[in-house]
Image (cartoon, rainbow, N blue to C red; front, side, top):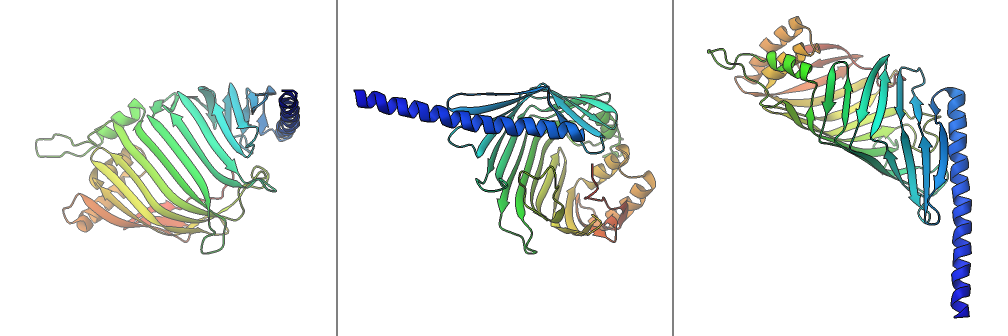
Length: 342
């Protein structure tokens, strides 16, 4: 019995010592992160605490604030927690408070959720490179002056894979959003833009006020690995292998796949094959949403009608070349600059 008590006492002391050392290291890291963020104006928190003795490291940031380098984007929350079991410190769980706020270029948005958490695994070696991460948001909602947008669920995942053909560090990326409702004012404008479906003047529509799904399956190549220096040295996107991008909104479906490279100036080069079912509705909605000018849409409709040959579906190449982009015969203007800092 005395030996049993002695062994138990040794385990308690050893475990307590490990928790104390590990918790102090994590707390020191968090406090240094806040101090550095304050000096740059990009991150702050009202306080940082550590709990979870003896089996967990529960790090809590009270009232965290995150800003983009140019101050255009600012995010705030009541709490953010970063947790791990003391015997697997390289596997972290993140939890966000249900109420958050977002400011973009002076416009304020309320961000809410029923549950928002992430799982993060890093490799236990120098730099703590990312192994995989999964984010799940239940009932995400974001609202501003133009109304509220909400979804039943949103998921995102990233996992390290083998280097791509060009030798860049690569990551598999997946995103899924289910049952997305757009702001009422925007939905009404989009639905009202639908062309007449028959001579009686009855308008066709998407068949639903809800975007049933939006999914992304892609592989990205970066110029450096994702590790604990990502905030200091942001990686550049070098290649994008778009394996599947799909969207379903009532009668409208969109599917896309292709491969892009990114030039030294940050502009994409390559071709993505896009298949659209319900292209007339989508074209009208693009005008209503101010994505396309009416004259461009009118020109495109005539060209697409010839290509579709009376069918509801049409497949077109989305071409990025020389800093410009076009969808089949429809010019879309300047291509986005993917490396432009935010």
